[in-house]
Length: 329
Length: 168
Ligand SMILES: Cc1cc2nc3c(=O)[nH]c(=O)nc-3n(C[C@H](O)[C@H](O)[C@H](O)COP(=O)(O)OP(=O)(O)OC[C@H]3O[C@@H](n4cnc5c(N)ncnc54)[C@H](O)[C@@H]3O)c2cc1C
Ligand code: SF4
Ligand code: FES
Ligand code: FES
Image 1 (cartoon, rainbow over the protein chains, first blue to last red):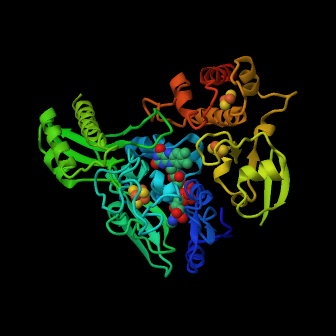
Image 2: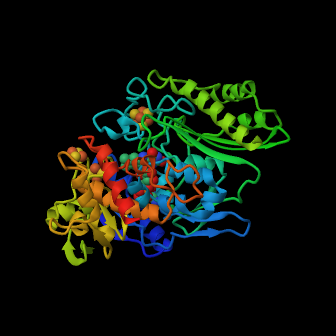
Image 3: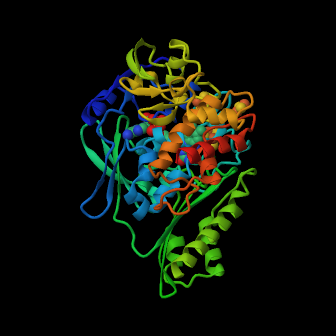
């Protein structure tokens, strides 16, 4: 690990101020320290935000939840309100990492974790995300875990978070504090950038912009929620494909359909056309197949990850079957 | 960097390079070599300790981030002449072979049984609004952050199950 200056932030304003000179926040440290040990990330200055008062989960006036950026993944998954009203979020968190890691990992850090692309981690190989302009070793290399949607010729990495997929399907918004004291709220769609020509830019956050909370809107009524994660082993592995779904039925027809996908793209993926197709229709295998056609119309494999395209189709169909069956029962 | 840690009930004042992980502080600076370094990247669980009662990977956190915290390591869970029930069960159920993963397994399982007692759900829990039960699937899922190269898994699960059963 390269040497760095270490300091603690005493308030959110202090954190923003300290970051003004160019600093990197550390929360749980489970992703940042991993990357610092490999010198994939080498900040000069670490600002420890763990003592900030951002560990509360509060109810909002419109029936939603405001989740502090430092709430641990364990505490969020275990919250009785989340388990009851936003189960897709609990399920996604519980499907991620391990008991030890979830105790340390925070809500803000989870959103900003970096890709697990093997070449990003391996400093001996070219990687446009780690070293802009150096090339992408993954396109013709071991890309089994990488993306089939939303990629660019410069990067085909996936965003690895399970939690973010659930947050996306729930229409969560990220609350931030900028260095100049201004606050803003971003949807997850607006937060994350696609790689395009600049895979090193992953979010719209400015240097030193602190995530203070994630806000969930009121729970969706009369709909079933699930998180399905497909991976190489039953536990403690990142998603190859995951689907977060919230689907409602009324009089035998689909009245509500929110779907987000992990493991497929550089950001938690959502496709409004897929959801529009389903609304108002009677559940059927043909309909679900058509939904998958739309989702995967532009999917492109790079060899070792070709299998993700049929896998995504089958996972989506299976999830839709599950959610429409239970709702009608 | 001045850092104060309470480890197994004893206060320690340390002066550390900020890069020092909690694991290295325990092993290299305090001679508490029970916690093991397997991967140093959060992937194996050999370094598991409890911080303020919760299990974490001590290799993926900096010691200075824990100024003022209470840490329990395997040395604090029990000693050769005063074994904890779980330690005893690992012996009687043959829950290890080489033993390298064992301190991490025991620290992790000690905290995991607390988590179950508090009603935390897991990926293996059928109804996450219900109290979890201590099935083999639940134990395996909750212990998935602790790898064992010797694959002593069946006996590890048995040691945990027996301990929980006897304390119930
Ligand atoms: C072995 C292993 C297996 C894993 N498996 C999974 C898995 O299956 N699914 C999954 O989803 N995840 C998995 N993870 C990843 C884990 O979820 C992340 O490491 C964790 O969520 C990151 O949170 P943190 O608080 O530790 O972040 P940190 O490491 O502290 O920070 C990550 C990044 O976010 C920035 N940051 C943190 N907080 C803020 C804030 N409030 N405002 C602005 N910037 C901030 C930091 O500067 C840093 O760049 C795994 C990790 C490991 C090591
Ligand atoms: S896919 Fe992206 S992260 Fe992976 S090597 Fe290519 S540029 Fe780097
Ligand atoms: S040494 Fe910490 S998890 Fe392997
Ligand atoms: S007993 Fe050898 S690694 Fe587990």
